[in-house]
Image (cartoon, rainbow, N blue to C red; front, top):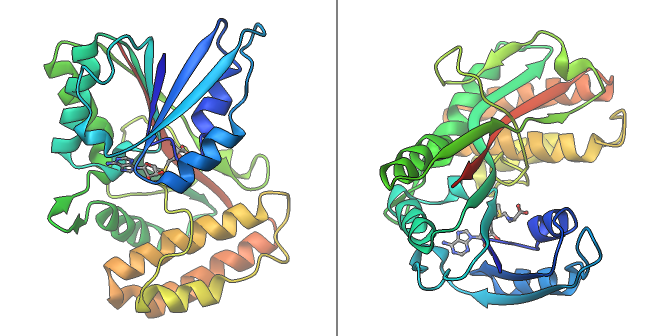
Length: 283
Ligand SMILES: C[S@@+](CC[C@H](N)C(=O)[O-])C[C@H]1O[C@@H](n2cnc3c(N)ncnc32)[C@H](O)[C@@H]1O
């Protein structure tokens, strides 16, 4: 049995089940029943060696899972989830995993580090505001955002587990551009070596709210972007700048101009983005 926590539409199961040999039964957990329906309908049915893969879904809050709920599991997985939790909720997940005595693969957690090439004077301020947005308090829940990786290391280690951390960078843009030397835009301490990842925790999707509305309008449409990642770059940029302006409404005017500048660079095929994320394997 493999439990995938916060499975959404099931990307982890589709990716990993095909890479593992042997019969597998996946249990997908999410609080959104519609996402689980899509995940179950799209799950693959054969493992790396052709063995059968079966799936079931469970609707609920993953922070309420206990060791008994995960009993008998071979592995617990999650992707793009940790930043959405509070430290208390992550602590409960850690206790359930360690209590069940099974390893956990927790992938693509945002670290807060973003590199854009070429650099822009506003990069650091937007990155800082975005990270503050990720750490915001929602209905008395203080989200971990880019603190999630450190929190997971602390919480799992405290329970006696070994935590392996590996970079998982998510690179967008023309091949090669994101790998050129770039201004580092982040509010994290310099010199920390981390990786990049996926859109959800990284601000993918438009952000609602008056401040972000102007930014979203400035970014709408992907025509002119070079390469097949054009729409993804626009979507990420829209969410990233929009969330920053939602957090710091005073940035909105400059944010609209910044977004337009970045779009022009993308249109010219010159915008590269590296979003740092980390993968954790815990045993
Ligand atoms: C950013 S999405 C990631 C989905 C998927 N793991 C992926 O990588 O594509 C986070 C998912 O976690 C779910 N989620 C967040 N907090 C949760 C909680 N406390 N209990 C159950 N599901 C939760 C959300 O509904 C959403 O589907």
